[in-house]
Image: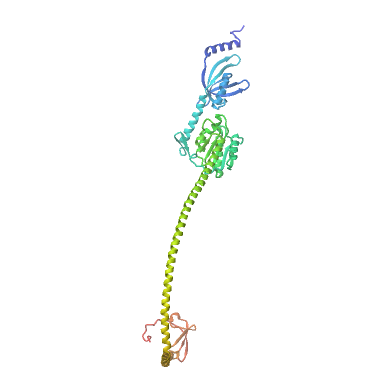
Length: 480
């Protein structure tokens, strides 16, 4: 016999089951929790997972319970994934409707009956709005909100007239990138492009720094890109959380090259789209935007060509008419001027002929008179000329004799002067010639005490040494 009462385990678990069922029977609860230890059995459509609650300050688990979803609960999870694009997996924060039950074999269980999709979508949107507010606050120099749109340094840039050189950020196995390339390379206008690829991971919030590094690589390459294209294929909404991060939004907003996004989303606009120059929904749309931009430039050029052609034709026509009118005017004026000058020339011709006849007649009469005078008085004229010649000869002989006598007197005068000025006469008068270094000196400026000089007198030559030198130009007796 046992000293205390003993019951079977099944009786205990049955009592627990009965007690819990009496308390929680027909009751459901909406619970906010995080999902952990999730596993899904696709053949049966069963989900097994734990629901946990974490302390907001330390992230320590303060409550934990096992949960399961099957039947309608599994269908609600599938609908949740379709609506939100969020996969039901570990570490997601959910609002779920549950029922409490107890099984004698499996113990306490929480059964998922429904899941609130709007809660998860709203939570993601709340995080997105917080990130936008942070960008607007911390990056006010190059991000500001105007109405419902954000004005950034990047979306204020201008595309070049033609976009040809592109830097593309994408994953190496992206189908969206292949669609982008195919659309660009097979455009019906024959445009060509130079594309450099910068491959990286484009999924997962933790990969934002990798994508930012690709932007830094593009900037540091120094290549003159016309635009940067960020490409990603489609996927669940949570796959785009990378493009809602603060670090990537900030990098795109201040990037100095226009950025085109084509990240494959059809419903929501990511923060990266809001900060970029030209957001598009898909990689194909991004390629079509580039082609349309180049086509617009080509259309402008063709329109200018047509305008130039039309304007040229108009100018040619108007100037041709003006030239034709001017040509007719010139022809008419030329004819009038020619006719007028022809009449003038005819008048001049008649005047010249008449005047010439009169002049010739007058000169003929004068010549006739001169001829008569010459023929009637030849002897008188010759006699007069002979008399003139005889007078001229007599005058020449008289003038020659007087001129010769004058020149002889002048020569005698000069001869007397030369004799008076000869060195012999000058030396006889008491003067001397002084030589210094073989040259005649006429002043004592170059002679110094101790120099040798030669003094030439009338009757002797003296060699002397200079003992002293005095300036005596003002002494009496030296002014000859």
